[in-house]
Length: 114
Image (spheres, rainbow, N blue to C red):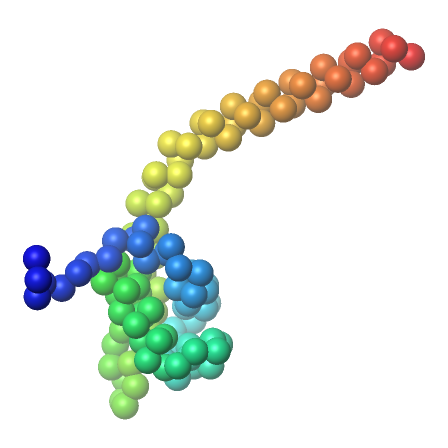
């Protein structure tokens, strides 16, 4: 729909490595835009755009403090990703179990060959 604001979901928000780095920074402490920008070799405007996407996904919240906006992490939406990934853990666990079985089988064969 033209003219309507596009909302980003948590998956879109974390798809970009820069935004993931911003989340890591904010996991340790609240930061103003100027401090966040100092960690990246891009313009303040580019960092603000990344923060906007993260805000739309409700992963960060900004609050005006004096002349600057200070951002902090809102980790709750990340549970959606954790839940999505937990479904696929069964496949990883299955593959690891198969690998363990193959390694143990190979070790048993080597002992028998001695």
